[in-house]
Amino acid sequence: MAKTKGIKPVAQNRRARHDFFVEESVECGIALHGTEVKSMRQGKVNLKESYAQIRDGEVLVQSMHISPYEQGSIFNADPMRPKKLLLHKAEIRKLKAQVQQKGYTLIPLSVYLKDGLMKLELGVCRGKQLHDKRDDMASRDAKRDMERAMRNQSKE
Image (cartoon, rainbow, N blue to C red; front, side):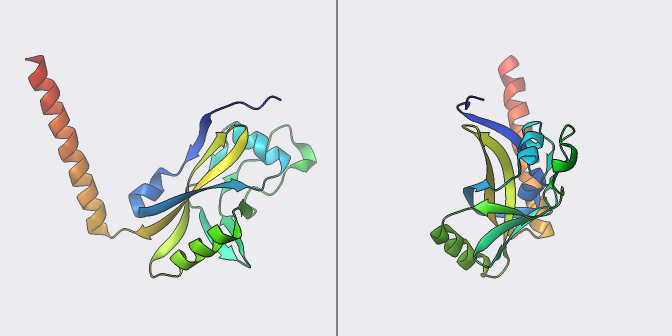
């Protein structure tokens, strides 16, 4: 199969941006089995409750569900197995230093196909308090109301 150029989104973790402040994001590869790649190309991946941990100098994504490939027979891997992320040692050390700060965690933000390869956008995130979420919702509503008023005024 020829490699396609460009970026094709596969899945996004919308909940992450609602529950966390994304301080920084890093693009990394994912070590996958063949049937997992085929299933991900079909969009059968769920990032909702997933998170990443740094263990023994490796970054692993936990709770990322990749549905078994329907034509995969016995070669399908466990859908919930930890997936290793492909990063340079310097990047892993930098992420580890950031995560050791109070309140920071690694959250997968999106999975996409880039030039024929599966990539994951990993965010260094800090949790939001309830009042932060309310502020975000209020500002979003105010922005929507202003745009609606501008549209209505331009029609007149």
